[in-house]
Amino acid sequence: MTHDVDAMERRVTSKVSWRLLPYLFLLYVVAYIDRINVGVAKEAMSRDLNLDPAAFGMGAGIFFLGYFLFEVPSSFVLTRIGARIWIARIMIAWGIVTVCMMFVRDATTFYALRFLLGAAEAGFFPGILYYMTRWFRPQDQARAISLFMTAGTFAGAFGNPLSGALLLLDGTSGLAGWQWLFLIEGIPAILLGCSVFFLLTESPETAKWLTPEERSWLMKQLPPTSGSGHGPSGMLAGLAHPAVWHLAAIYFLLVTGAYGFEFWLPAIVKKMSGGSDFQASLLSAIPYLVATVTMVLVGRHSDHTGERRWHAALSMFVASAGFLLSTLLTAQPILALAALSIAWAGLKAAQGPFWAIPPAFLSGTAAAGGIALINSIANLGGQVGPMLVGMLERSTGSFTPGLLLSSALLLASGLLSLALRNRSAKNVAQE
Image (cartoon, rainbow, N blue to C red; front, top):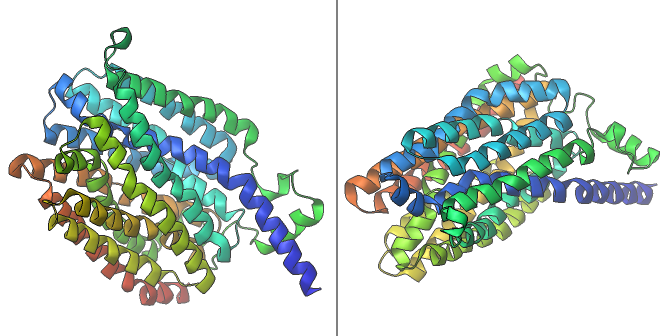
């Protein structure tokens, strides 16, 4: 009997993973490229549109203001009409806005379209995470989330060189290279958005690619409310849960440090190496490749041990140390890039264990609301981080203060993570 159960577990887990994760991975790759490609376009856009570093940082970051304002409402709609329809709508909308980025003419239109891009994409990431809680058992979630989120590191590793190559089309048919970049990289989101409506299976109950026995086994492994926690299950209850706000504070610090670095990574690497835009985009792929491997290994180990808090916190401490070390090695570009790779690997590795925490104490639409609130508040750091780094770079002429800022933020995020267990346990006990 035990052998039969183990065989069923392996078969269903493998089927679900292979059916969903590669497709969700692809969707997130496209989303992430369209979010960060502006970093590769920075030098060319700034030159053509006369944007100073602070103005560019504001435009890069204002994406997250639109994201913040529409994240929770978008997630609420997703729980009402289903992931298939709503994620398709999200992708088509952001693809259209990305294409429209080719028509930017000045700072004002840059700000407006980046805001609209954030509003269009709002709800995608928390919607996907909520969707995954309907398919993956709690003990499998950190690994699944880490595998899904390697799409972000993959997008950085291969998207940055792709974006850099598209810049080489400068002057073709009268368009600047950065205009070609947004045109070509916006179209896949529109096409994939259309495919979601036909290819994304809404829930295990409707999965024709599982046998009746497999569907029955999987549904018994997942609570009927589609969340794995034993806490509140209503949307408002999830939004009001104190532990959700604790997690939002942790992730806000992480995201501020992350995007303060990520949007400026090609420029930082270019300044360190002295290479061209395209060479900088190739070198920028290295931190993402290192992070891809690291986050899978950390997520797998977190699932194996069932531990989340220390896996997230120690990863953040490694990231903090990497950023700090890079500032001491600016005269040695190769070693500085190695330190930045360590920092980025630690930062990314923290995310799988971190995002496995909310479903552990939230159920149903509370999980969707809680995840959306954490992500929306935290992603305000995506506006703050690039803007602060831009201001520091303009006032000092160096990226060192920005890297030190990222180091401090990741250290604070890790320390706050260590305080998570007692507070969360207390809150859950009071439910």
